[in-house]
Image (cartoon, rainbow, N blue to C red; front, side):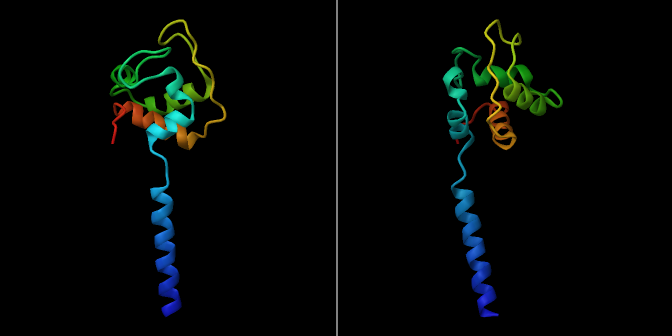
Amino acid sequence: MKKLLILLSLASICNLVSAADEPSPAALAGSNGCLICHNANQKLVGPAFKAIAEKYQGQADIQQKLVAKVKNGGAGAWGKIPMPAHPESTDENLNKIVAWILKGSPTN
């Protein structure tokens, strides 16, 4: 019984450590190349994250649509400059990034 409790305690600690090591959405945006063309508050090559959140606020299924758009690339929604595809980015990471953008890219 004592060994079982020790194993359960170790498993809990491992889960806490792995959750703490998970990168923030902002860090994921940086490591997935989003911050090369986007900024939280001002237009760079692409629109500001704030503008994206405002444009799509309250739209049904927008999370899935934007994840697909980031993954596959797109053009026309924000001007003539196309957004390149990001097929190397995982759906899990893209979902975290897009959810963060749609929340207004909070800093904490």
